Amino acid sequence: MAFLKRSDTSYFIKDRKAETAITHMIFFIAAIIIAMTVIVVMTSNVQSLTGATASSSKVLSEQIKTDITIISDPEIIPYNSTLKEYTFYAKNTGRTDLDTEYIDVFIDGLHVDPQNLELEFFEPDVLWQPGNTLVIDVKVTTEMTEGDHRILIAAENGKSDSMDFRI
Image 1 (cartoon, rainbow, N blue to C red):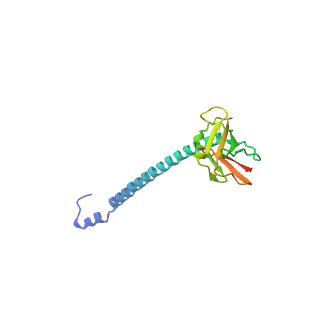
Image 2 (image 1 turned 45 degrees about the vertical axis):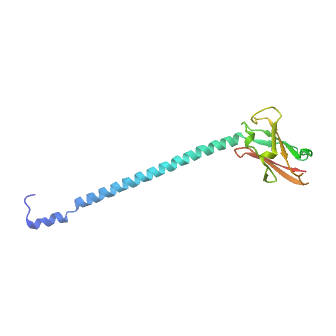
Image 3 (image 1 turned 180 degrees about the vertical axis):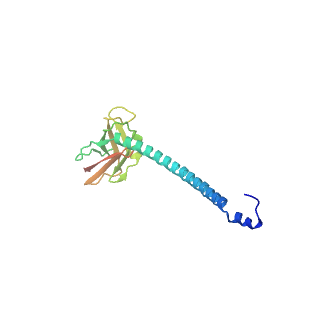
């Protein structure tokens, strides 16, 4: 370009190529920032989901290995009128040791207070090992009414067994 005349100055005012390039660059930088924000948010969500999946698969694995079977005779439930307690028998038929401190017993849908439970093994053990039978003595204030009842025994991971019985 040679020397410009005064009338040619309007040429620079009409040239918007630089403005268009700057606008495109601003939009590009904004798109990159938005994309990075989305990636950070998605990464944290994926990590949360991964952690939740790992912990739930561990619980599910424990539940699969755990099994309880109530082996009491539903027609004849022993009752000790002197001690006012019913006796039930349950067997650990799973593949994991269970801590009896975390065993819950429900009779007719009502939770039996641990103070009213006496849990003992035929063999002296600390944990309820697979294949061992647990003797559950449930202390009551009054004798159960005649008729149908239900007992449910639940382990710490939620695995349970129930039995309908008649008094």
